[in-house]
Length: 547
Image (cartoon, rainbow, N blue to C red; front, side, top):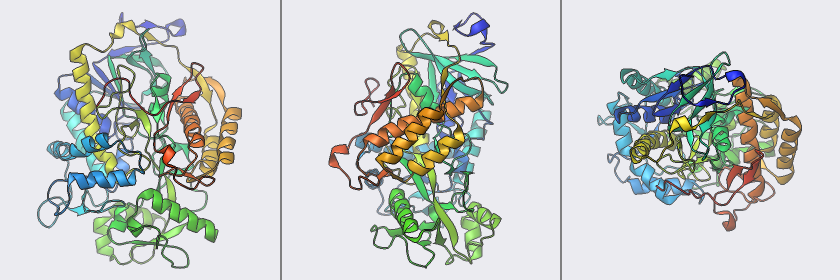
């Protein structure tokens, strides 16, 4: 243990220790951006990931980055803010939204300086497309529909050039905390399940989302709500977990599809594709003024209603107006996925259905990534900054990761300089937590059936009962148990909020309460009771670190 923190493990089981100023958990856009900025600010930073460094969700982002660069006539930051607020269903934090979107141009500029190459337009500037909820062509993209791949490539290359150390195949289990409750490091397991500690006065969670709560998702296998669980067990509140965005156009690969399903980017509709049902009727006709480019919650709900009325399980995205060379140039990733299931999108409409995509809620933070727990920060999809509200505007997620990742690193530097963070030597290495763990297959089945796009009180109660019956207290001694425990806790927190929100708003659709209730125009926060049970809290307000 090198004379560091005290070990609370039986038989001294914390086998090794590493030290840093900042430990970043996750290698997505937010985590790598934060690590690079921390390194620039002179901090000793360590990045830890439970998978390979390229195993996160960033690489799967197809559409692009929504940003106003001043080169699109009529567009403005204010207009981008207005579109975001409209999509967010009355739950966006206006100040946070303006701050994050306002920082967007500088953040994208830094990304380009780090080597990211966006597709060029005819005028020599970046090409643009439009996605659902946007009133202007403001989404920059790379590789046609492979923006996430390019963002990840550039950030990983910059991290290697900047000598940012990365610890692969180590899963974060729990934070180290001082007697006062401040975070001062991280308990991790290596690939063989051997525990160790990473001591640091600051820990940044950038672990991504919780798509694996559901049977079918656009998220990779690593999206198991790890950061949400770690934050809750550390004493930080989470908010807006009931708002899970289902992407309306995920490639339909057959009945009972499981795991990560190929996304058909919204930009295909931005280029003129339309949604039709099996009879050839338009799905979104008369539903919203923006039609097929309405916000995602609107389009997903319209598809779900149409499928219920027809007794079918998928609709079609007709992009046959695009010839084969155009589709190949603009959407090579989508084309490859379609051809793999025998569909040529230039000749035949693409079968699609909604699937779990993005968590609009998460750990409550400021726009600088600060949580209510000193020493604990969060950025990216795991965080709830107030940008997304009840429904995320398309392509705002990469932007948020770039902006908040940078701001979080700067917040850590400021907090270190002010001396407000804990001394890691005051923390003890905790024993491996023993917490409820439900069977993942059972959890995914009941969440998909009762807590997807359409919910009601009876179904949500079924989910709660099934989780109560199936969950068994287990020590988190393996990566699989850490992930399953995180999914169990996140599901319970989500159900608590969803059952309490007796209205339909944004991504949260209650079949038994179909209307929007002005009384619910506020966020619901959840924290853990001393016994480890999710409990609804007051509306989301931070007690420290105001933006």
